[in-house]
Length: 126
Image (cartoon, rainbow, N blue to C red; front, top):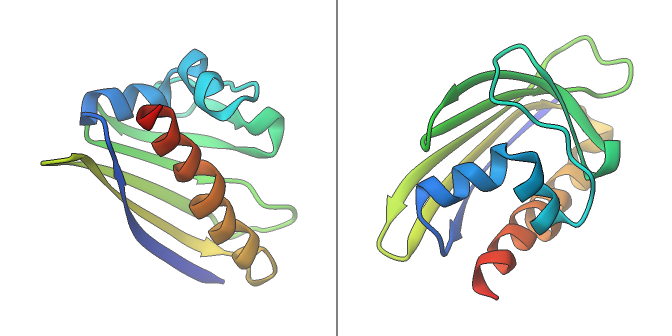
């Protein structure tokens, strides 16, 4: 199991970024795929047309999102924590993803960098 931590700069306010990460219609706009999402702790979510699935654990509006991501046959919980910090150029997103299975680590890091946050950043730059 491995952990990943990185900061991303998104050219939008924390309120806009929070909405983009929690509203299924907005997620679909920037990701291009169907999304199921709720800000109800304990609710299940599905992103990228089911390629990412898990459970929502905790929300602090415009500041924090905590999720459990599911990996095949893994009993350890993979936890994603996204913290939104105001920044002069928009929002500094602090990502912490813990307990990533070794065999999935490279794909997960690539996904965070080139899909998840790259597409979100591009959504606000266009």
